[in-house]
Image (cartoon, rainbow, N blue to C red; front, side):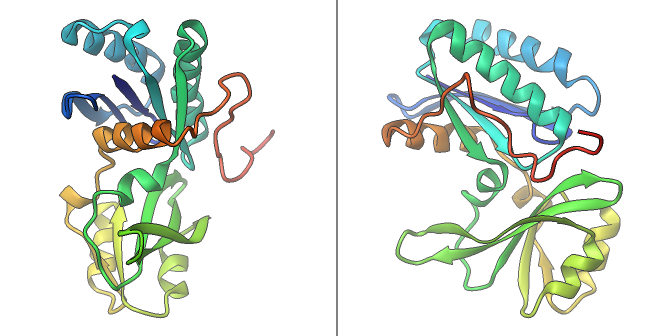
Length: 223
């Protein structure tokens, strides 16, 4: 059984999958702007009880490792590390934007993926489709910028997905080089995070719970 925890932004996601049976046992996602600390642990406990699973039954814990918000990443990784250390469970760190990219269909156009960074800024990275691997691969590393900065940086028509405000969506729809995907394609799905974690576990790509740290992209101000 794989538990997935995504608190990288104000959109919180949890999932339980049973890879051996090919089942998604539980999945949930909701907006949790200021109460992630309270909601995350309670939601995990409720999901495990509902499915008749104990923390000791978990083979791995997949967690969104960033980039994302400082507070959100710290909360999610803290919960994951606590469970992993107590129960000697493998911890599986997955880049936040890889979760979003994984289920999206192939395209010969660049794919720009975004998450909110606060103060009207976004975190954005460019992915390209690998025909050899049949998956999206990171092409241009994530950076913190504004929507205007992002659009000015583009040199060819690009797909855009992720956390897109209504105002930003209108801006993207009216620009010749940006094609925002519909909202259902802009959600980070926790069951996909669990699946990516399972693939990492099969490859032996686990992290040390005692030393793993989030990818904040930049140090928080004042640190």
